[in-house]
Length: 142
Image 1 (cartoon, rainbow, N blue to C red):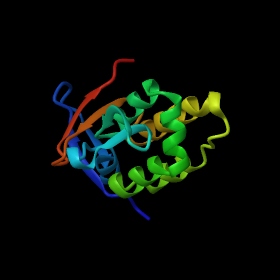
Image 2 (cartoon, helix red, strand yellow):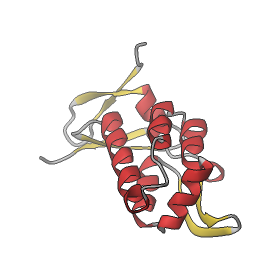
Image 3 (cartoon, helix red, strand yellow):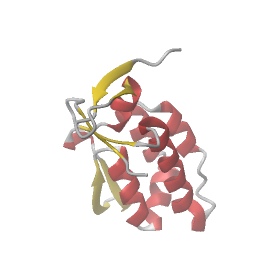
Image 4 (cartoon, rainbow, N blue to C red):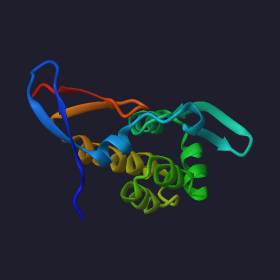
């Protein structure tokens, strides 16, 4: 299966690069109504939410472990990633994170998200994709 490519240009360097259509879709910001809202338990929201994978990663780094366990047990993370963002690959990887590794849950989820974001965006590229799927990018300094 071939992935579609979208040509985009880097405003700072005027060099061209290619971004896969699936990366644009998976890294985009979703509408506020589609954002992931973190809870500690049913009826107890943390007040934190994420509208894209980068925000999701940042929230995973700071939200209480109880929230991570709650959502993993309910398969909320994998459902949001698969159904809202459309990334079945990442959803499968998140599903493999067991709730029994209490001390390592955060590290496992964080590592899984960081690896996938790097796969999608590439090691030398930071992308911001809005709901209209407009790409803003910049080269990372080495």
